[in-house]
Length: 304
Image 1 (cartoon, rainbow, N blue to C red):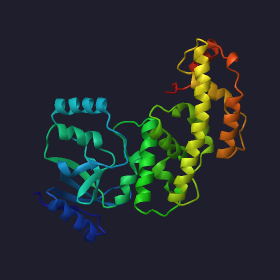
Image 2 (image 1 turned 180 degrees about the vertical axis):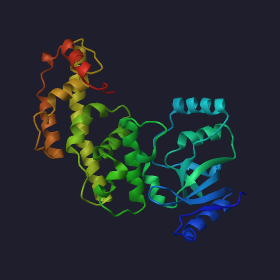
Image 3 (image 1 turned 30 degrees about the vertical axis):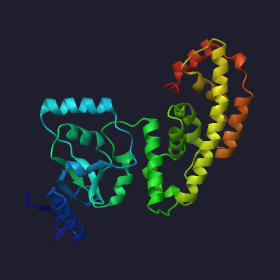
Image 4 (image 1 turned 60 degrees about the horizontal axis):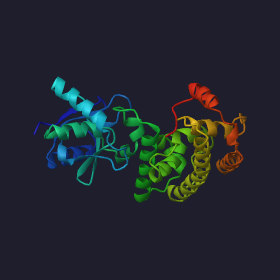
């Protein structure tokens, strides 16, 4: 194995004991700790290492592998015949979780390399900072939401007692928690159509994660009620011969209870109550194909 080197700050005589211990564990695991150093922004201790490929795994919380992205990345690595982008990893039960390098890890697996270049971070909580760290492929709404709800349950399983709102950085947006539950139940849920409403009224909760999770389940259930009314409207619209990919977005925009709410917003339950009432009163006969097409030009991507 390569000799361990230190890149230390002038004020430091040597790295902390727990960092040296981690470097030793990397060696015991069959890897090579190449250098211990302090990163230049926060001065945190990190280890640059070569980790045994078979011990590097994605965190249990992150999005599923994108086959298309992995294939593109594999072609590029083969073409330049060089791997230059280390993954971030934390040690967990004799293995290494990478919160931001699953596609790169997959490529090295396909190439049957022995090692994965990695920046190993002593602080295990970094495994829950997936959304901030993951830069190799932009997340879409579904991927973000599924990662957040997986992290949410992972934290509960670890016995985390802090309030949900204290994880605002890790979860990024409160409504990702609710949408994550919905995407798990319905893979083609129209999250993009509901997000303009949810992002404004779904806030992080001031209660510990475990009871907050129960509230999240109830909120997901309320949104499911609204989605059931929305599907009934879409079916009626289709029976009238109107089949446009923007129908869900169009209907929800017309029923949005927050359209005139600028300064004072209703709470989550009140907003969803109003949304459901508007959907139940919606007059399908007034929908015209040209109105939907006109709205689609100004709107975002259509709902699934």
